[in-house]
Image 1 (tube, rainbow, N blue to C red):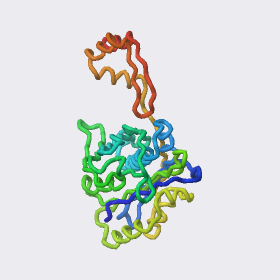
Image 2: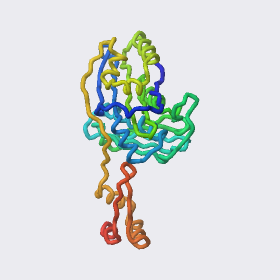
Image 3: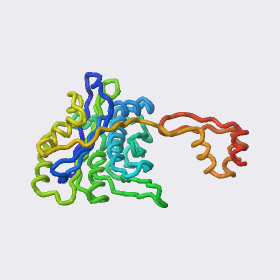
Image 4: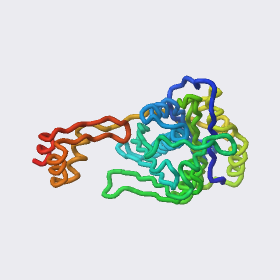
Length: 308
């Protein structure tokens, strides 16, 4: 199979399509194909608002948020947590996205204010912003002694192709990944979403060739969404001829889990010596959440109380 495709991004003259974020799960070809599709416009817009990100940073982070929201629906247990990290040698730096099993996602990019020229196709140059040299890893915390960590080198910096490569080489599952974000001239999000299609063991050559041709000839994910298609419509356009069966429609959203208690635990993890140094020298501390930018202030007295 092809390693994966990405929805194309471009400036868009409308304000997008008003649709609730959602994910659908489906099977096709008598169970030899499983598929996920998502509309994530609102959650990607929320990430853009929180981080005040540039267009190319919004596209890169939005692609990763979208993929993680769909991948989270592959988790087996309600308490599982998944983290996707992408670090290339481009100016964006590290991208981190975390999701629980219910596709409540949160994420950030190290440098959200990257501005680059458009690429030769007139699109945001995500590959240059991310960098083509680096790594992608997926960490699944399933409540065991050690989390599962899958690691691959970047193959393009386009994120969708890199995730498809991850599935093929780390999990040995032939996969197509398409993720896209369409951005308005004011850098707000017009449309965002994606799909993941995987071949199950035993899939024959005919279904492989069908998928390769269908994906190659299909419109970009952002074009489909900006023309009013929802996640079910997207999969119907790709797999409707192969006995597509939608199994469920699920919510997804941007949700941070930070709080004062969590920040206290972060401080405690620094150790008594470091906390005492902060109390003596800074007479307090202010911590900021990477995912939602909320700030938490601790007085000198509160710091000393943490030492106990």
